[in-house]
Length: 167
Image: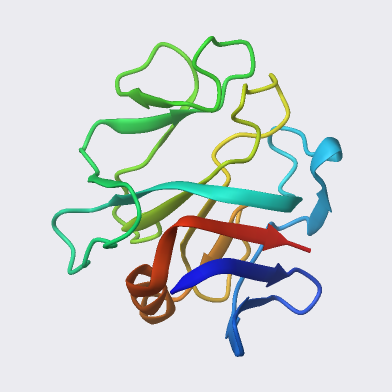
């Protein structure tokens, strides 16, 4: 079972034990977590617990056995408005402030692993919606992303105490 996932930002590699999987990170590279700012396109370095998995029910996804998870709904969102009380928290659309839509047609969020970056408690403007999700090749807005096949394998191996260490 997988407890520690290491993301090597310089090599664009996600390591699980001896396995090395290609990954993508933020379009502006990586930064120390204290330097992370909303909208900067950087992936925050640090060790982040995996809080939960969010899964599209209409996709061929097997839920993780040892990690909290729930099915996404069409109105799910994630607040990215630093001045809002729900900043870096899940919300439902329509939402009065800026919030990313989690139900997408492009497949990026068919599986979302919510990372515990800036959430205990959230600091306004210090970055929101830092996820491990699906994508091949293209940079993200600050998340870490892997291929659907790699995610499928990862979901089967995760433990409830799994962490993602971004270095």
